[in-house]
View 1 (spheres, rainbow, N blue to C red):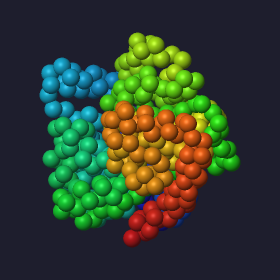
View 2: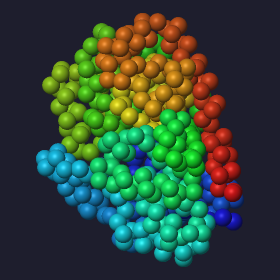
View 3: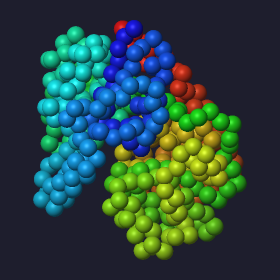
Length: 377
């Protein structure tokens, strides 16, 4: 039985973390011995039926808090280039190498920031298959996420036996860098099976995402809410860092949007189900996405999707076939399409049907089969 280890940052709340936990759990039910190695010493937010091991020199919750403060000071006050995510240290790399040797790991799957150290890992573990699994638009790593470590990441790409990306655009970008060992691996629908349908007569619009102004385009969302048709409301489910949450709450109050833009905190299970059921439209204003899991979740309720264009939304909606794509950052364009959807139930029904069609490609069983093929080699 092949031993597979996912090296992750952590498994706290987030769409990509949920996908990681679900994939690991399901592969463990197949002919694989699966484990997870985390660089942060925090419990998984999601249920796991596989072994979770922390790096001996991993980051505690308090250490992570101070790293965030230091990063914020360096980037926004001192204006210095920084990594917007924590890169594994030399000691953490040594911890993973020791773990892989002790456990006789056959395949290491380096999730996100662990891909930066693929070179070091491959040199120490030449007989271990190295797969880098990237969860964001690959160009964002260069332009935003890795202010200090992008050249190191780019070099490490060549030491991965396979790089898995979320979109065709990402694959094309990596191939332009001379990387042919790439493949597109979509995120699957991970929400529990249900027979619920959205209320297309509702005047509620749903938004689900981390409270993060830059990434999720919450500044755009505020402007959209200010111009919302009378009687309609946007319900926002999600949480974020405390300073981002305070900023969002202040924006709602300063713009007198308490009755139009309703932030209800994080939701899962029955609460999230009710959130989708009571809506007639799902919207996204993100500046960038990898392959947004929440789209598939909303689609499973038959919700029509309207999203600002980015590589992730374009991939899920197949260029606009399965939902409405608007120009990135163009509030007027978004509002025009939103108003048409609000005013025309037939249009909502049309895209509701297309949402359910798209789900056939994103079923967990299909995605797991692809994983099995990769890991069996």
